[in-house]
Image (cartoon, rainbow, N blue to C red; front, side, top):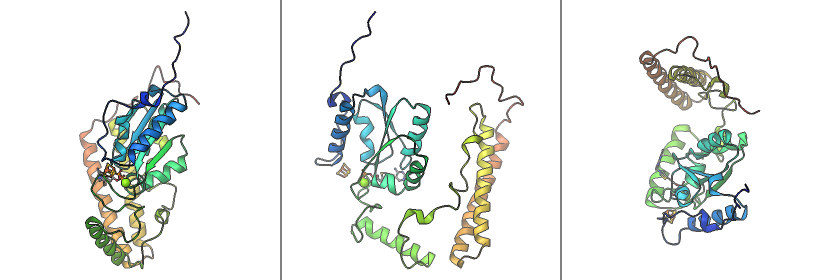
Length: 271
Ligand SMILES: Cc1ncc(C[n+]2csc(CCOP(=O)(O)OP(=O)(O)O)c2C)c(N)n1
Ligand code: SF4
Ligand SMILES: [Mg+2]
């Protein structure tokens, strides 16, 4: 028996039947066209491609393609896409984002995705504004741009400068880098087990929240300006509340049986 011939696909084969609801003239139409043309030119097939996005006008793009799609949570597209690529390295994974999604709420994920260097293609549709929510400034908005919402944000920024005692905003997000490579409440990958129970997940979360509490208590006890100490104490208090919430939750969740990790037929994971 001969295998059926695989026909080459055109850009239109990667476009779904959903009609985009972007405004007339929106630049996102040209990104959709370019992406579908590129997929056809590369000889890929929709079933071998996944398009993952966050939230925003730009993040609607997965629905407009015939590929696998995941329209996720604002700023978290890279986290979902990283998990997908690690689990399914055979898929071509595209990540679609906006400047708000990728550089503000998702800014930290962007930096960590660069550091992890998983094989993803990250497309940021940078229109210099939060389009979907009607025009707040984003990290790529030109300084001094004025809209009604920009004025409200300017008041917010003024308050931060006053509270922190800063003459101006730090220039780069990396100025906020943690002392170690991850935030204090990040769990290590090797703490996870494919058979773990909810109780184990809570146990890890508890350890992470305790680490965060100690981190902020450490800052408050160190030689820092008064306002930083006040903020650190507030953060430590918030983490303490999280610790208590998890402890209460753990009382309601059944403890795993003694031999919970036994598996007579464990998965054969690739190298
Ligand atoms: C956690 C969370 N915070 C805020 C929002 C509201 N929100 C939706 S889209 C968006 C900004 C999108 O801007 P951008 O990523 O630049 O996309 P654009 O619409 O410009 O393409 C915001 C703040 C949300 N949906 N979820
Ligand atoms: S609001 Fe802006 S980003 Fe959103 S669809 Fe309209 S033109 Fe495009
Ligand atoms: Mg935008």
